[in-house]
Length: 184
Ligand code: IMP
Ligand code: MG
Image (cartoon, rainbow, N blue to C red; front, top):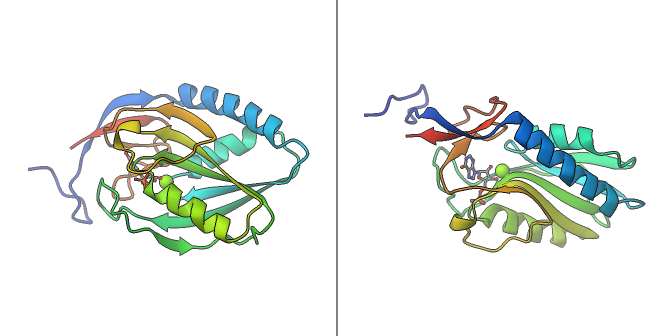
């Protein structure tokens, strides 16, 4: 029987490290150089998907030299305390900025089923954004239920449930500076 946490969720242990801090920083630097090139002379709103994208946003934004960068956040939830997406996406908080006519780059931690991002892309297009692109630090290609066009992708990884670097299980492990498999 796995141990139970205060919230009643089962308590996994931290397993194999999939990506170290250095792996992540190195790849984000490459992606930041591409983003600087692609958005030179255009406005750019980085729209982070809370809470998972908190670390990616903090590190990526510091690597960008784009001088008209704005940062905003959106909160969506599709998992609850589970390790599989429910497919039912809830928007818990809206962006502050009016995104109509803006070049929006969604910044996310991981594309798993793809359901959250494909829903979000449609939502932002409906708000009249001039362009909507996606940066996802990670992708699990084996678990894709819908194809999401990722303009910027950090790494493809195996289908194991992972945590750290912003990503959680039952709201824990987000503070780990690396990304590890959780063993249940
Ligand atoms: P999707 O809708 O299945 O693509 O996943 C939506 C969100 O669920 C991701 O942006 C993550 O925040 C979270 N998620 C997906 N897979 C994992 C995982 O392995 N560990 C932690 N969070 C995950
Ligand atoms: Mg996310």
